[in-house]
Image 1: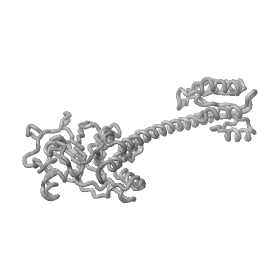
Image 2 (image 1 turned 90 degrees about the vertical axis):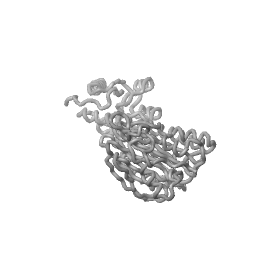
Image 3 (image 1 turned 90 degrees about the horizontal axis):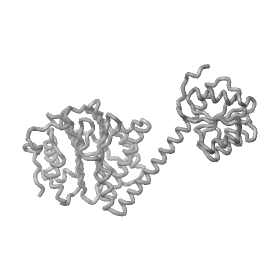
Image 4 (image 1 turned 60 degrees about the vertical axis):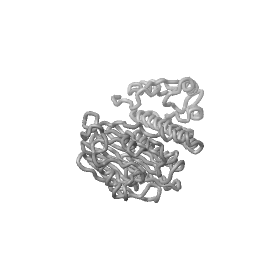
Length: 424
């Protein structure tokens, strides 16, 4: 038997405890050759001293030893370090000892004499893999608990102090005018009350894909703002799961909205949210999107024409068991995607929904448009009361030099015939 197979856990420290010099040397030599950092002890007392001085990553010990046998050692180690893997070795015919060791917390046992050392390495590898998984889960659980504590603290601040709540909600928003490859994301969010039931988010999923959504929670104020916190935490959790374990839900807007709908329905929040969620693959220049009852329809301008994404669907949290259809869309080189809440319609003075939608198709149907311009045209920066929260998210694709195409009007203003009339 050769030792060419290398250890899958380089640098891991293994403590071999056996009163037989020949066995101890053989095991120590083999484990060192396959990549472990190996120490040894001649009996349970000296082995326990080694563990107390510098705990190893795994203990490999014999059960029958002078001064302190393996069972007593195992009991003491398990009491002090319950997550430290211990693999025991027992002679042929000592099955009762092996069963007793497993009851005391041993992770595995190997029958002596060990004729195939590959069996030994397999047992050590599996024990270390399990220990690594336990440690990873512990760190992940602590991270989730820390995140939950921070979230609960944020929720208490929102309930106790609206001013602090608004600051928190503002801090949760993504950085404005950020770029992912050739795509630029910009947004504006104007609450009708002190806190907003509208929310936008943009986030990197992996090195070529990023997600975005615009949510509109029914109602206004603190209760609606709290739901936006829940929605944001939901998306962050699944982005983190994708990074940690390769979970694919965040890449599938339809499936993710179905899960969001189930969670909001189950939590009995008595609130529902409309939400448009998309995932853009910068490498393939495609977008996959799904719509949870969001209206007005998002608009896509491809440099020549503007079309609406008509994707009917139920709001999330309204009815359990809802299903959401996914749409895959190729993204042109010169594009503007506009997603906005229905509060924008309330600000337009045009008579009737058809006229308002026609104006928005004209306004966003060009290669150069900014949310700042729309804020100025609608006088959203003047602190005037508005009937509903307003959220606008723009995604523009540049010309390959880091900037979107201009339409040639010189100042990036609204195209002729698409100027926003002043509010009365």
